[in-house]
Image (cartoon, rainbow, N blue to C red; front, side):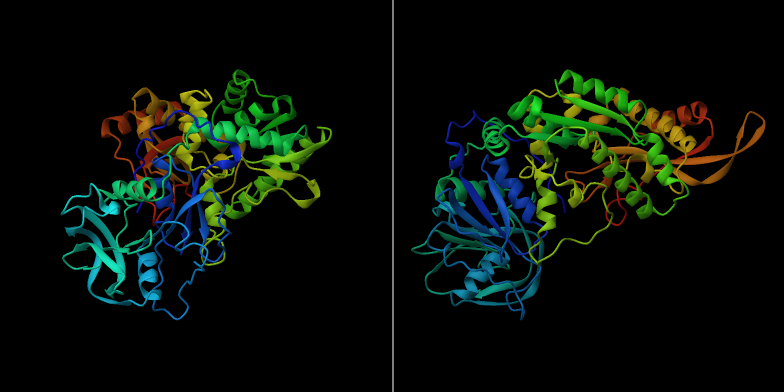
Length: 529
């Protein structure tokens, strides 16, 4: 499940020394909820990092607490994850969540057994020790979210039970003499109604975090770090027109000014008039931007290709070639800047030792070939998508730019099913423009996470006037999501869909049928290819 994003309450910028940023470490045991823990922590204006359980770094003085995540594994499995907590437990406050709680109980001499009853979904705390700091302000009968097949059946004498449900006696515990706690429910999930209160109790009252990690402090710290890292070196950045690369560009510009060179490539697969409008927007930001129209190179490379992965790889290769050509024109450039964000980093270093399964390749994942000999700088790599937007807002970027829907790197090539031709691109650009402009005119754009149109490889019979037509069909797609990992289709008003369908059929030559995609992710993906 995905966690709805609540608004961050940002405070005044921290004046703390750059190298003294407080941080929380979350050890990941492979749970689907680990990112949600991080997002909840960030909501409390506390900086945190996710590390695989088997790659525990030596804690520095800035680490004031550690959280152990859940896991799809059982502590009774032969090859269950075993972290090295020698330099953590009793050194800094520790909170085990689900698997983390069960692991701490087992290694301390307790027993973890398969549950007699299913323990998934909503439950309620029947007993709460509100005098314990962890559960301060958590009322009796508070709803919590369970998701485990094992349960703690016995605990050592040093363990104090501080919370129970009707089915789970050891729902929460405190190890006496330590700032170590365990909970068998998930406070990070939206359905745990007092989960944020519990996390705040642990982070602020137990660990002592000052809650001063804010967009302003991030900008301040990042600019200082980038100045130290880059010095007087030249940096080249590939702009996409999207939020991540735009915020990256503005942050780098603050740090190194004219030594930043931005390249915006028109692959001929952008939205209607997007190349010109994006360049104009970047002018207003005072960025040094080189616009390159490479449409024909991309069309030539895509000629005759219908397979989705083949199209993606062809686009990726041409993009690299064009970027290489343009960066070579900049003398003494030493760095490649990328708009990588935190979910990309997390998913590339999993708790199980490898990246997640590749559903689709992306044109710029993995950097550039070795022959380009550029060092990588990624100023946004520690931020989630919503945090990137808030940093952009703190730097004065326009709401229109920050509120832009995500757009796929390969552009309209993966929204045209089958081979790519300029005529098909023109048709889809016109359809897409009517759809997106309509969403904006009707006040629906900001209620949708991502929207677009797909040109289908089928023709259908229609009638216009008294004449038979045999023309193309298009599908409209609009989804709501928090992070793109899961998504549900948006229930757009029928009246709106009727109006848009009518406009498309009347105004776009070659289209006589419009359908609306009502599939969710999973099992479908947001894009069709």
